Image (cartoon, rainbow, N blue to C red; front, side, top):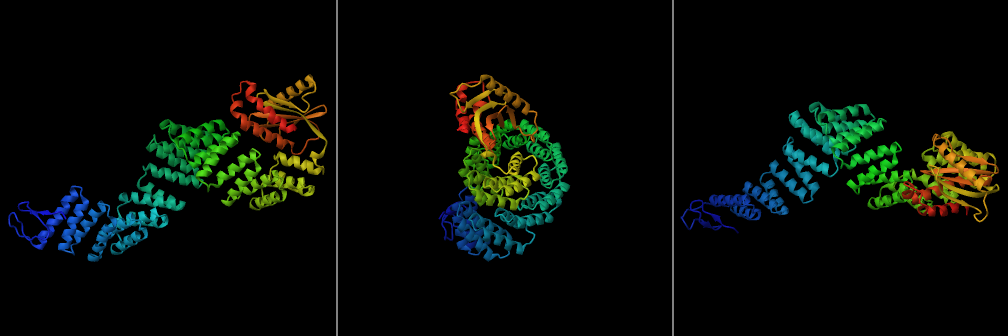
Length: 588
């Protein structure tokens, strides 16, 4: 135990002594208690909380009912990290002064720090029973409820506090209540608070941004834009406000204006991942996917590990046909967030595009386990490609039970029935697909095959040549069924010239027109494309029903494997040698 000092001569006085050995000054019990209280206060100021707590304990031993001594010792013990001991002191304060609201608030705070959250909330409520208008008690209770996710109760208390103070002093409470409503997904309640804050503080740009976001969610985009414009009038260099405005412009269908807003934000701060990410999504919407991929790559560099940004970039890479690159991102994403259903869906899509149907099926099953009903249709397609027709049919029916007007689901059903030789059922399904989407080319082909009541694939046919051509007309690879025989060079040259012209003309087609077929004498040339490459397959006889699907699949594989070489290709044949091997598989 530390010793106190005589207030008369400064001589050390040991606890329990009744007089000073130096000057003879005699002490009463109250005098000795004051000495220890003063000693404790001095030690607190010196940053020695444990020694101060010991001094206060000496004062308490002289007067076990001294309320201030317990309060001071509690604070010293808290500063010394002895939270349980501090709480014990405050409980004694409650015994000595049951109506002590401040002591209860301090006790509740200590209990919260020690993890006894429900007990702390109960103590704050007890304080309010003694003083229903205690702002500190209300604030502590509301903040505690907010922190444990009981947002509706917190919102009500924050709003109650705002009613107890002058309007200008209640703005922070209203803002907290608004944020609690937002966390509770109570959008109407949050918007009501935004409007109240706007009346009291029209120049509050943060409130204007949140109000604009809520209006966007309600579809009131023009009013939302007014909020963002006002926020920018108040703070023209507010990059976040430019991003919010860009989002609203995109929502209104003015994507180019949205991109201008994102650029404004990036002019202010070019290290804003959200601006780069939202610009990337907007560019992708305009089918400027290469630019979109670059923006999203920048966003990922600035904010690695962000699920939304990583997902957006993966989706753009899938759209670009960079399936392997997309898979790397998606597998990392679901490794980090295994409950992300959309991540598993996109893994399935990428695996499906690469003809890895079993892996695609596994991914879709995982998505279904995470309550992603859109995976039923994707599962049906994977099962169909795996020749598991009854299961595929059941999955397609499940998909249609959830979304009746899905032309692709009807087409999958029709293809399954056709494969099983049930032509009437196949025709009915194909007609349903065409009625929903007249531009569904696959459904049109299926319907034509059904109406002829014969399998097109069973007609005599032969694949003679396969050409792989860039969209500028340059030949990447040519393989023939009979490479050892002397070919008619004039005929081959004529074919390739026709293919080149067809490819150039195809850029004038709309998205609803089929690239289709050329006929040259006894042979037909079927043409399909993917991204920047085309395949032209020369066949004799009838067209096999699944040939175009195989052509597209081949192109997907070629582009996924060779796109880093093809996009800046300058004619080096050694870099594209593997393309001919991919093309040869179609003949074989």
